Image (cartoon, rainbow, N blue to C red; front, side, top):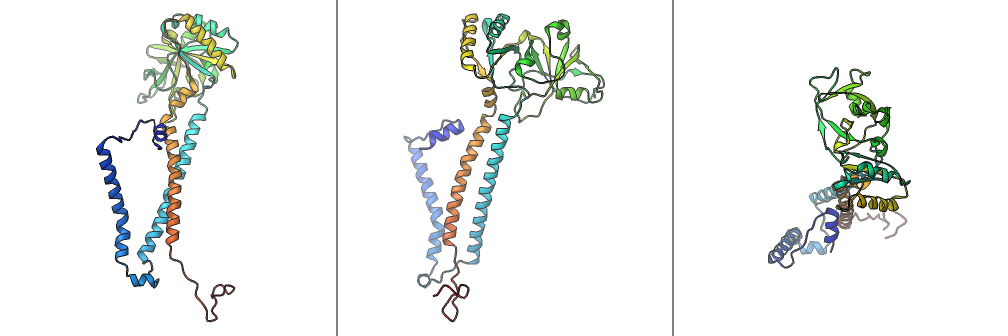
Length: 358
């Protein structure tokens, strides 16, 4: 009955083979084995008990039995507490990852791949889209911001340690990339059309890359990427292009949209539905041979944590089951726990409770 719910939680397609004889043989075997193991101890215990002593109510738990019960109680408390704490940690960690500041604004951001004629007609697309007052800005890049895409270790600067070796993530971007993505520029300026050739010969780095490059020389602003020497024109706050399972990596941006097949569109809040219809009409007009497809960046980012979200949901359900089983076990153990009968005094009253006559 709960298999569809379980499949939905785990993302699996499990099914019970009711029509196969092997399944029924295995099921009967499991039931028989479980019944045998579960009934063995009570059977042997009762067979070793003297009937007369039962009627005389003289059966008392041995010291080993009492220790076993206490051990079971302690084990169930530890198991339940550990699983509850683990669930809380997992829940908070995943919520932290999903709601943490990424260094760019993923909400109200739509991604459209420049398939077919869209790549050649990008300037027309950008002009048409930005004519809509509900669209703030449009840009394109080679990166999709959901994992490693292109990186290089051929980045050098004056005073670089020869033993230092790390990969810098490379972003080929168009104008307005920093603005459209909602990145925070903490030093310098963005790529600008007014600067002309200066923008094509400069580079923008993230904070992590800037700290590495200027570690031994805080005034350094020139680096070499491959055989090209570039001036650091701007520094942006660190932004996550990977999940929080990976540490922050150094990255740089170059103004080179030649291979930018991913466009990003920043839409004003509260106007997404009507704006999507407008975007679709423009895209289908410019690129009729390809179906219109798009992605919301907040949903795309959330899909990076699908396995973690499943783990969180499963942990919650298993915690509930563990608490339920622990409560049933504790109820059973407490019901079997040997109670001490109150000792009577010579007056016929309980010595510890004189107001309760016997």
